[in-house]
Amino acid sequence: MSMDHTSMKPVSDNGGGKVLILEDEDSIRSFVVVNLKRSGYQVIEADNGDDALQLLREDLTIDIALLDVMVPGIDGFEVCRLVREFNEKIGILFLTAKVQEQDKVMGLSLGADDHMGKPFSPAELMARVQSLMRRVRLVKAGSNHGDSIVSGPFELHPKTNQLFKRDERIELTPTEFALIRLLMERRKVPVSRDQLLDEIWGVNYVGDPKIVDVNIRRVRQKIEEDPSNPEYVEAIWGYGYMWKENGV
Image 1 (cartoon, one colour):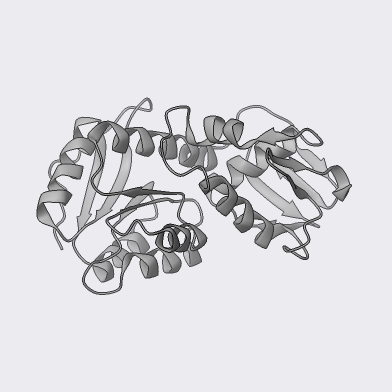
Image 2 (cartoon, helix red, strand yellow):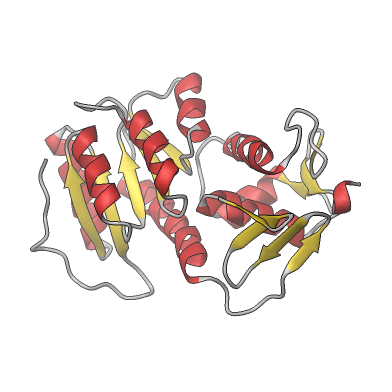
């Protein structure tokens, strides 16, 4: 494992944050690190899954983890799964050569926010990181405006970025919270997949649009009594999704 602390520098609120990169290929890791630092991010490096997990356990101020899958030690999928057991607020983005459909779905189903296949351009990488960082910051900082949204057994608090169901808090990733907040704010109004992609992942998102559906499935697993027969997040065939007020 290699860690670069000496080159870390404070970053402004307009750009930057703390990012961990897990990648065992030196050339790829260096490429990612250079581009992150040019954009003002603090960077922590790991070249195996065990060290990455230890770093993520020890430093809960890390905003985003960029994870390769095929690395020494535990793989990126296992890192993601274990991290989600103790940190729902961190953003997780897979950077991997494994671009088969089942691999993308696996990463997202374990709690990742996004997935990029290698090779990728610096512009695409930074656009994805910036979009995810925006969601992470909203969850960590909370909103300075907005009343609570009550719908059936749910109560969403924009100021603290928390969701409760019958007074029990539901742990959500930054992307899941952004998704459910948007749907609840527009309850009983269908929202297209394109709208969800533009407003949550960003207008420049060029990844797989199925990322919306995977996140919806994760949300249903957390909020629905029967995820296979959802009461609250309804699919509008061929269009998108809608939050059903009070389940109707």
